[in-house]
Length: 345
Image (tube, rainbow, N blue to C red):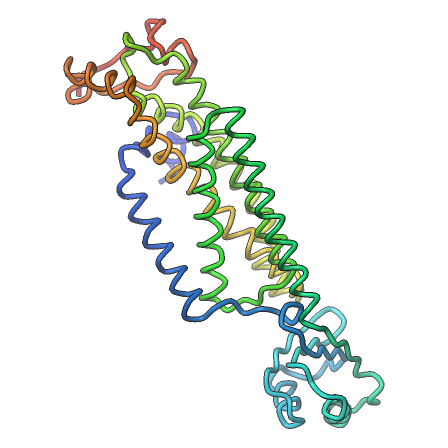
């Protein structure tokens, strides 16, 4: 494994991402179906900020979660979600009437030996969460339109379409993870969703920029098809994508797995899970979804179909394997000797 890792980071290994597009499409289809099934069957566990409810906070260092839940249940609360925080306990219930709130406060005070006044109450209405959700949807629509406009102007509409499909792919899978894991969806989760959109777009733009450079001078005399040139460009950005993901995901993983378990940073897990899943899926989609989809669209253009037929007629696609060369626009177009250097299988 160490030898493979060294060869990978030296750029000595080529991965046929585009040639295995059926594998990636099948894998993505399975992930999307599982995610959609989770959303349909389980739905999202919306936090109190979205559906409204009563939030009780108090300090009881010797209490455990079973005691807290039992105390609230005996006082008449049904939907009890108990969490530990740095300041004590945070317990969320459904919206309770005033007399039941008083009963809960008295029950908690009696069970954990404290004055009822130390059991703080915060009532949250569902309308506030609805406003947050509406603003998040508006932000998502504006973000998508801005992406389409930018990529269309900077690159072309086919790259914009491939990038948007990859972004939607990332969102659905991340939402599916929340549905199956039953993690609570809070406003912090929405911020995480919007953040992973930017990260996924960044990775896709890096790849597309290299593909644009490599394929800029593909013509009738080129010795590479669009598929081969795009795959060559993708391999040259592979290490950059992996390094960026690794550096970005380490602190997120620390928050998710260490901060929430050892230090009780419960309020951060909603954000960190979205970032953790989104970064992994975003890297995968930029390499295995966006680029193969772009190649599928581009290979339907008459000039690239003609180029592929010409190379195939000379045996280029069946008996010759491209040797990986430093990526430059001239190399991709066949102007230099390195562009056409090949070896027999």
